[in-house]
Length: 280
Image (tube, rainbow, N blue to C red):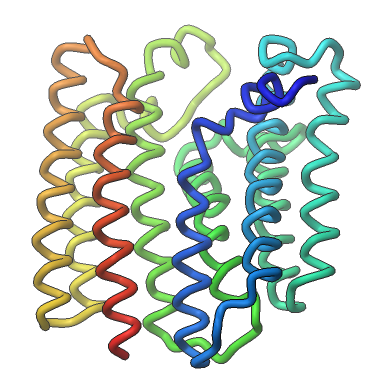
């Protein structure tokens, strides 16, 4: 495959922004031990995370039977394009990372396998699929945080919890957009289908409320905390409103619009998080 075909096959356009999680974790980890950036380890860990994400998407498409549509000519070739990224990610982890990072990478790989592959195929089980999917993306933050095997404070770990909640919100929105198609397939029983459109919407509303409270708990009542509260509240209102309009009208690509909203929110929160932990 050519580079452009590989980008399409690995669906890079759908996940490259998750690499911001690893950058955030890496910078927070450096601050915890007052270290300077190591360019080699920083580049290595970002490449490792990109390969991990590429593997996850390729494995999911392989098990869903979408590998030919993505560009692989045979099932065997689909297996090859799924295995190569994960093997390379393990090699990079061995070269630049700490033992704890290898454990975190292993958790991500195993979670991805359990989520997508037969005979487990846990993506078909309500709630469990939501947790596993969110976990697979959340571990990317810990790649950056734990690369130097440093002594991390509770607040730094707690940021991973916020990312986990955020990933659940986006997964539920993804399931709402694909609900009709998933129902027709007859083989998918995810959380949104089980809860129904209305139940899923109110679950999102409750998660948004918990997300705001959780961030306040992490950061506290200070200037940065108030700024996070304000920005997160605006984000959640936009998220809920966009979801509500989609449910009523179904006339625009939900994931694409929420991705744009999330990118703006993520950039602002990235800056605020860096300022907060730098001040610490």
